[in-house]
Image (cartoon, rainbow, N blue to C red; front, top):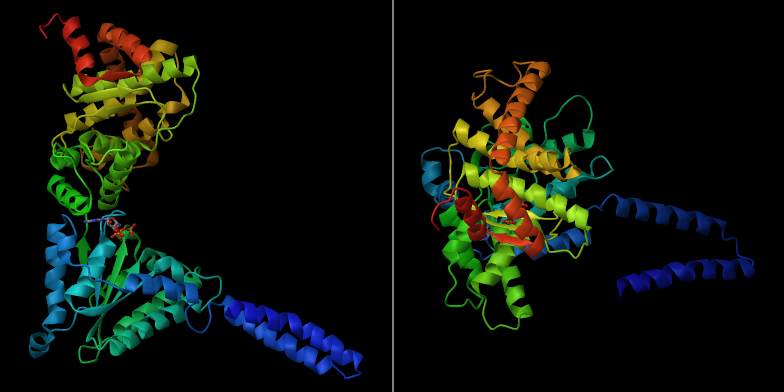
Length: 500
Ligand code: ATP
């Protein structure tokens, strides 16, 4: 409505001027005035306004209503415990001031995306009976110098006024992606970011215990090492809480939370889903429950079954099935590649292959699904070497059957390189215990190729030794486009003449 009135007003000005000119009135001063008013308006609008723009206001309002408690966050037991302890300082502020303890001004939550950092901040606001104001680091990045800083001021002002309006003693300001504005300051560049960061530091330094409302800033990042040390020094973000990917118990808890409003069939075992979803974040687990419900609805079933949940895990892990048509030749190559991975995996960890599938999903043309393994927190050298061999086995199989590799192995190589890197930083290579900066690139390259060449040769030999299993499995896979773990292991037993 406001926009329409504005447009009518803008449209009628030229008409009015032409009419006045027709009547013989000198309109030049009026034109100059209109241009000046227009320019000032545009400038204010482009710089994000004196206050935050309407859309940002709306965005913040949307997240402003919290009510979420720590009980609604799955897993993360130690992070929740640490956060609660820190928040108790805010709740028990009278005791604190008696002891002369300075208040906690900032808490930094670190961890991979989708692990529930935003949820934690919201629960923190609820726990301390505080108003909740949220913003993201990227909102402060503007082309114009000074805008970011003024938005920081706005954010703090908004928190204070909101707390006063709602008659609350505390306010929680949540800044997601703090690394965008709080990255290390180097040289004279990025002046805009510096000003925004300086403003944040100034605002933080201006928080006092006695002042009402008491403000707590919670920031989140998944790149803590990128942050400027000024942000992390005592008195600023000096409480660091790690919010990690959930373990099996945590995953089960998150699945429980997100299945509350969904009809699950009696046979469903969420424990099994928790096992299958190793490495998933909370956001991915939420997505699994949601996708499973969609599959059940598409199947016209009243309840979500285990099959729907398994399909949903595959979808979240590998992407949606696509109807990309591949040629017969391409299909055979993919089958050879995937079987390479499968044979190596079964030899390295017997019983680990769940199924090999030849169907395009996401960006992959086929995949091997592994059975859930026990969660490990420590890896031995031989375990890492085994994993590297599994990663290299796709390309090795292509080399044996086609005499060369294809582009299908780039992800595998990336994975292998990451594993080699882990070995190097953990002192598990012939270089011994090193710091990566201590050795030259040439030495690292040499060690890297030595490890990979040796493991690639061992992988090739492993595949040649199991050529009979490979060939029979390839036939089934090409015919049926799917090879179950049981069928696969049957081939191994046959080749060794073992009883079933
Ligand atoms: P990012 O770093 O990408 O901002 P984040 O760590 O802040 O992510 P959230 O926004 O808190 O992640 O989580 C996204 C969604 O994932 C939540 O709305 C929730 O549905 C689900 N989720 C994530 N972690 C959990 C958890 N521990 N318990 C329950 N649900 C979770």
